[in-house]
Image 1: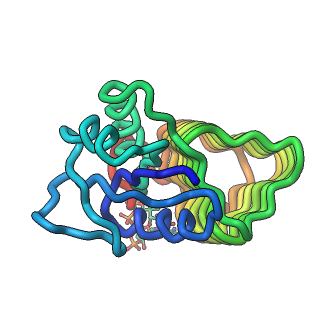
Image 2: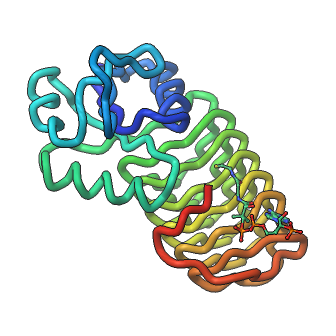
Length: 220
Ligand SMILES: CC(C)(COP(=O)(O)OP(=O)(O)OC[C@H]1O[C@@H](n2cnc3c(N)ncnc32)[C@H](O)[C@@H]1OP(=O)(O)O)[C@@H](O)C(=O)NCCC(=O)NCCS
């Protein structure tokens, strides 16, 4: 049994905890929050401290691994870097719901979460600290960059490529071989029929680039 610490105490963390609870070899030790109240709990688990207390918490509670459970791509990356600096020996675990269907020859990076009923087809590559929401489809030969997110019910058709920090909104469809650039956000419900450059916000069917965005700009 791996004892897992969850970093993040918002709604997204609840989703990740729910998946961890369904994995037979993981046990949630507790949660790290940015501003914990005394005696606080989150989704039924104790809030053990804040970022500054991370090293002490890991030692005191015999933590084997952690996951950064923060929905915003940019913030998730910042916290992952903080963990690497504070406790270099702490490894990031992958979190995969038992109902997810992962084909052979798929690679999934450390710290990535794959939620319930996701389907990941053969030869897909998913980077580190990505979030693959429930009921998504990741087609064969798809490539998903580090810190990217696929919203609920989104579809990446075969050999599509999603850059690092990019986000495909709920229910959006990205057609085969399409490239979505890094840091780009695809709006919910869109149909992406042409490549979308990096650092853009695009939506609609067919999706059009509506504006530019900067790294770290809020999108949720
Ligand atoms: C696209 C998005 C990022 C917003 O981008 P934005 O540039 O900040 O756009 P705004 O919210 O200012 O809206 C601008 C206009 O676009 C429309 N619009 C926004 N998102 C849209 C979408 N996905 N599809 C079609 N139209 C959309 C708005 O209704 C608004 O129209 P109006 O000017 O007629 O009122 C956001 O709406 C979105 O779709 N986010 C994804 C949410 C999601 O999937 N969450 C799942 C959590 S994992």
